[in-house]
Image (cartoon, rainbow, N blue to C red; front, side):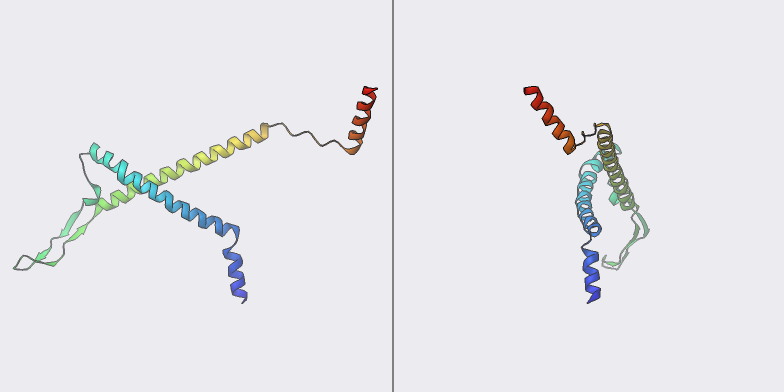
Length: 143
């Protein structure tokens, strides 16, 4: 019974919940970045370098073996380096996006701190004695 209670306390701690939210948002952010890479950047890069599709780039290490009827008996062995290039580009773009987001968050945080430091401190609440003296002064002014 103690194990279940400990697990509940652990699972429902703020840090675990924050981490879960971060993972969910990170997954959604990953989909956005994947779309950015696949649908926008890679076609542009492909157009610049002659419509090369990185994912199809490969080197054949062993040709497929065919039987007398021309059917494939053993598949070809290929080194799919184009897919590696694509995944590497994806990683670099994701890292760049995360760097940009963190940089914006840090900039916003420093601006907020700077504004808080520059803001004048609120006037201290007058004591009961000061309030009473103010009332007496105001009464004397009216007479």
